[in-house]
Amino acid sequence: MDPLRQHQDAFRIAGLTARTTNSEERDPATARIAGLWGRFFGEHLYASTPHRNGDTRVYGVYSAYESDAHGAFDLTAGVAVTQGDGSVAIEAGDYLVFTGQGEMPQMVIATWQRIWQYFEAHPHIARRYRTDFEAYDGPDKVSVHIGVS
Image (cartoon, rainbow, N blue to C red; front, side, top):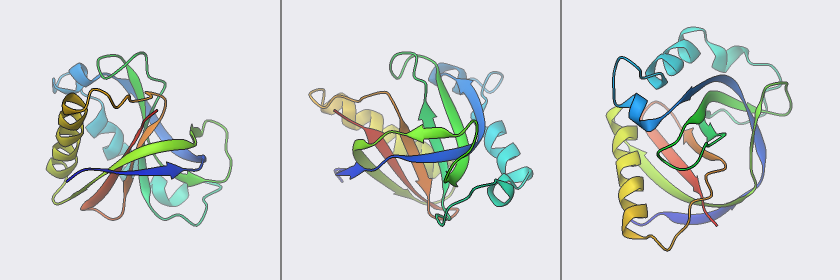
């Protein structure tokens, strides 16, 4: 199924952030993402983050890209906020939206595999590598928004 292209207005996310790479995430000894999410939920940050807006979804935001899919990036596990020191700004712009549903974490991993395959098959579509984000509508449903030019 092809992704939908949609315009996204800017908004902010606050939470926990880790810097990593895709190659580090493939090695359990250096992977940081699972621990970041474990801490986010373990410390109930989704419930205690100040300046929350009415959006009840949980987000994973990819930002501060060093280069492309091979370079380092920040991942922030968080919630939408109206303001806040240390919050991450999701840039306004066009995004391709890929959806996934099923058991975690296999579902989100499979969704990202579809995303990488899509961009390999469509080299004329340029990723921005500015901000991308996952929006979780519950424990088994995600929409992944990839910024494109």
